Length: 197
Image (cartoon, rainbow, N blue to C red; front, side, top):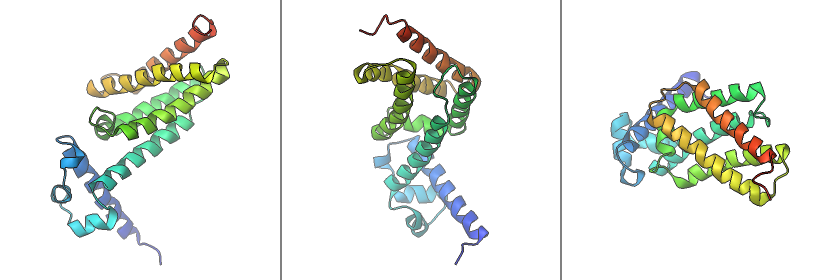
């Protein structure tokens, strides 16, 4: 038996309002102080409907995180391994567009109040991209790649947090150019052999 389109739309709507309710509540207090009743009251959804889709508020948050993670993963996988490639700029711009379009939840999940294990998962995605790129560009040892990763990812997360906190005043294109430019500068400095033993 197939699901009718109107049923699919209702399910999507229900999940959307539950998600929006949790995000609104997370802006005011941590997840451990949020109840199912609060989420349902805010969403104007009954508890039975909530439990038809999620086990609890943590499950809902995990689903939100998973959606964000998947979309970031897809965006990063499309980035060229060469930061000087013109397509890399457009793809990085697309990532910033996605972060801007999902600023409320991105701001929460990447903040100090966010789930550190989720942040580490996202950082791991970027780590894999950066270390592959650095090994292609310059033969780095695993230990050297770890240092470069720590520097680059901390900087990228800091830039995104600052951009979100600054109400995204700079365009996605400007932010993409900034991150790509910094990455190219780092790689060029490594090519000069001045920092690698």
